[in-house]
Image (tube, rainbow, N blue to C red):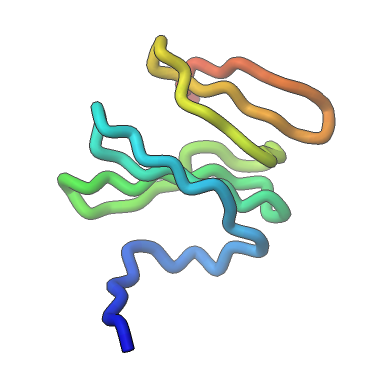
Length: 82
């Protein structure tokens, strides 16, 4: 049986779409049903809530350092700032 290490246990309702950002060494993922967006920083080994109360069904890194977000309403550009 493989050995897995838990890096974040947020009890997501529907955790989806993990994307690794090689430049920042961060992992991003969304909890679609919970309306939350998370980041795990590999260097500090800490995870944090980046955005709350906004449905994100899918996302991609934007070359400007932000994100392109998709949800049931449309497609959004977000600079990543709170």
